[in-house]
Image (tube, rainbow, N blue to C red; front, side, top):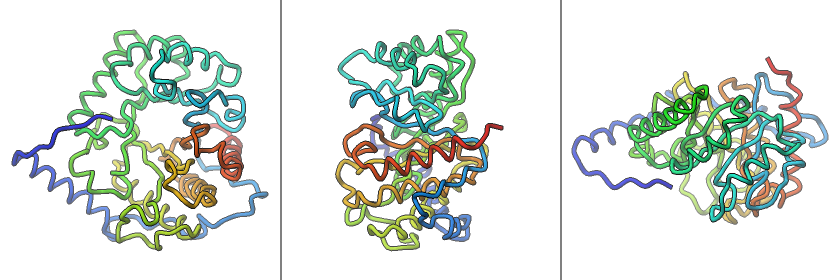
Length: 326
């Protein structure tokens, strides 16, 4: 995680105040599009196939392989892309042999890829691995929950693109997954505004509702913060709708789905399928949402720990796969 020193200059303070005002503008009902209708997030019979999205979407898991084992065979049965993530392997070991093996595996050999590039010191090694399969790369996340300013994000994008260019590789779209700054912890927007960089093609949102009794929720949520599935769906829909309104229309959006128990903080494990379903129902008819990435498949407390969640995500993946490409 990148950290930035505290800034006290008058210029930055003024910019901070202005950005806070911009973030808070998203809190006003008059400045934010209405949430999806309640019927859009209503629970359904788990035996009924879900409706396909109205636009192409990628569906891929974090940690389908890596430090928690190789589950690619099972995960890729209902996914249409692979998350290539050096940081998902044992960070004490060289990631390159493991990533090469995954890319050559029968489950992934022809799959499109979303690259989670990690930190700049490993980018050259990553590009060495990816160069032979570069045509399969759809886009690259060059910052994951990086708490950095816009100028630092601009520099990061330019650094990545320069390394790609030096290898004679085609330029790919780039994105950044910021933390909950864009969703409901808006105060973080005041300093960590890297996600507003105009050099980004994609911005990632984390579809994580506030943890009941743990997080301080915003006052504009439409329902109480508890483990009631209808309340969770209503609140998550509002959170994601407002977050989308703060992202420039020229950028595509990808979503990290909450598919784990938040390291034990989320006490309502039985509601995890409802969170996944609410996220999909919100995304499936929004053409700007180009990918859903459940976090995480084999991580403890994740998909493989919860059979009901696994079944729901399998249904979501199947719905996305049913839609023919444009």
